[in-house]
Length: 383
Image (cartoon, rainbow, N blue to C red; front, side, top):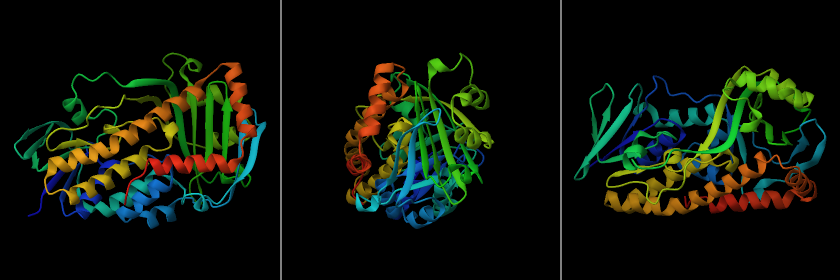
């Protein structure tokens, strides 16, 4: 007999969970509060663990074709004024641990949405749930409730499902950083043959990176103290900080119309994610700072792991608890890594900045890539 999974959220995590559970024989219903599931045109890095998860979901080839998969590529690390700290070729990462792809979010989200098909119901704002025995009832602001055997909260940082499961949890934790992000097409000539440029300054980091044949993704992350109180409009923040950057940064960001502002938050790890037939996934379970480069990847790894545990366990609750146990430690480790990296990047201490820049100049490229591959393998899943 087919069992029904209710999934709250049609982002990358929710759609991935829908595909993974459908592969495991479940009937899937995904509920999205917006009227049209859409990912803004910002970018992400898909490390080998993300590619492995995409392969398990059956969409790796599609995403790779829509993204930028460097084998050997030139990059530079610069100070904000353009002075180069390091110029190097990225080695073939497939020889060091697997494939790495840069993609715009719509490429990934679109591939998942195409695969999950008509399982998504839009305009459904979840307000809470109740569980009785082996059934769970999901309530909405306007529509009639939905009933199923399993509920997955994949509804992001402000998860309604997480709030009901953990009503006494502390508020989200500020990283002390704000970010402006953007994506632009047709400006790749400004990179002058480089695959990426990474900028560092006092309380500032930024990256500009190719994300498709024509697309570029970029972000700039700032110590909150560098932004006037109340200033939240991304164009105003960009206008404030751009004069400190070189001409390449100004040309690419100045050609960008699609901008987004974010204050960067995370949450402390939970001692347990779910209860009964209810669990969490992706940012609802473990919101990570973007400094890990693993937010989307970990949501997809969650989904594949959950699908595997549900195939292995005939009973739902033991399967959910096994999934949570497998994923909690790995995501908590990444959370700590993200916090340490964010602290280093937001520093305005001249001594710390000098030490950071010296370390960057002296460290060879291959060991950096190997370290990143090791982190990704440890954060991965069996697929």
